[in-house]
Each structure stands twice: as structure tokens, then as C-alpha cells.
Length: 121
Image 1 (tube, rainbow, N blue to C red):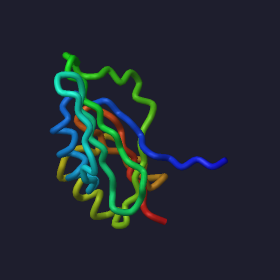
Image 2 (tube, rainbow, N blue to C red; image 1 turned 180 degrees about the vertical axis):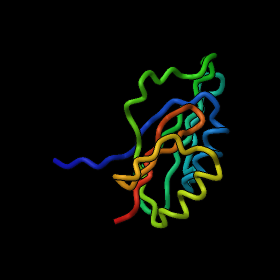
Image 3 (cartoon, one colour; image 1 turned 45 degrees about the vertical axis):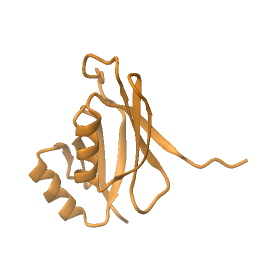
Image 4 (cartoon, rainbow, N blue to C red; image 1 turned 90 degrees about the vertical axis):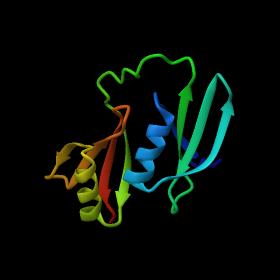
């Protein structure tokens, strides 16, 4: 029996702002959208290299931004040009933590989810 990762889901408060962020910050594009008007809208984003998708879920009845608690989880992305990625994210003002000793940094999306940026090996 074999398993393949299909997607990771996060719920977002403003779907359009999140899509814009992920397109600009990480080069992801919307591959498909599922919608139940008045209830939810889900956008599946993907890069051009892997089959794993990021599922962004917006719930119509959500009134307040999500409380991420201690936010002890993250999603990691490799950057083929780490220095250019760092410059872009610095310009965007979304770097929230740097670990220079490990050679990685984290950016924060519009909802406060942390995304780790690591150099390609």
C-alpha cells in the first residue's frame, strides 16, 4: 500500500487576499475552485514542479479572523534562488522570523500562518 500527499488545507479569512499573497510570494497559481455559494469557497493552489496542492478554504459564515494559538505548525517551501526569494519577501514585508544559523527564514501570510523558506539542495 502506498500513499501520496495530495494537499494541505488551511482556512483563510479573506480568500482573495490569500490568493494574491500566495501568487506573489510563492508563485503558486489557482488550479481549481470549488464553491457552494453562501457557504464556502475553496481554491486549490499549486506550483509548477510538484503535484501537492495548498487548499485555501473560505467559510461564508466566518465573522472573525482565525485564532492560530501558538502557531506551532508551518508549511515549508524550497527556493531555487534563495537570495532572490529573500529580497522579494523583505520587500513585501512578510518575513516574520529568521534563523540565519540554520539558513532558513519564515514568512507570514495574511492570516498569520507561517511558511518556511529553505534553499534548494
